[in-house]
Amino acid sequence: MNIKTIPVGELQANCYILELGDACLIIDPGAEKDKIIANVDPAKQVVGIIITHSHDDHIGALNDLLFQYKCPIFNNNNLMEGRRNIENFVFSTIYAPGHKEDEIVLYFEKEKKMFTGDFIFNTGIGRIDLPGGNAIDMKASITKILNYPDDITIYPGHGPITTLGAERNNLNYFKTVI
Image (cartoon, rainbow, N blue to C red; front, side):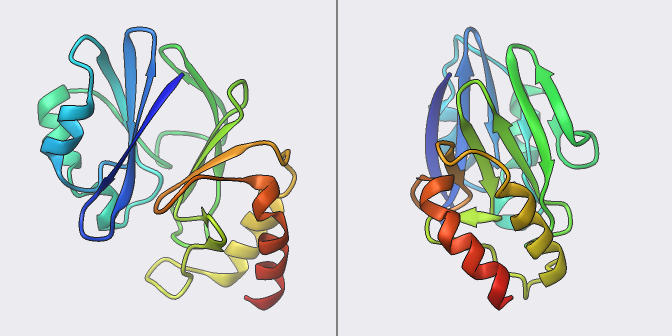
């Protein structure tokens, strides 16, 4: 699986384009539709757009891309927790409320890749003081994610990639202070 990271918008949200065979998925098209479209290989079919959570900086270009690609949208309303496949993309959906009540994480076990939206960042976690945020939910989500292996690469909603192992101490610390 090939992964392209496209920082978009004023808050530089990471939009991801995942390519596998002749298909691609778009994760979190926050803004700058033209920049996103320019990074989609025209030889590949966009088989879906996945939204990790519904904050504006992660969905700003959604309607434009739906018009462009006429593909399904996936989010916590239609991705049940557990294993899922969209075309050749096989992943697990993990509900991870805390930053936002509709936050989901996408875990591609074979590739050891995890797309965390604004749940986990490199050296941080998402804010819980915004609408939809909740400290109790965040603690529960952190506890759940700490059951996964350290060698998973985390692709956050903002900033550089990290690993779950590199974030383990931070996550344990955040559980005690929020």
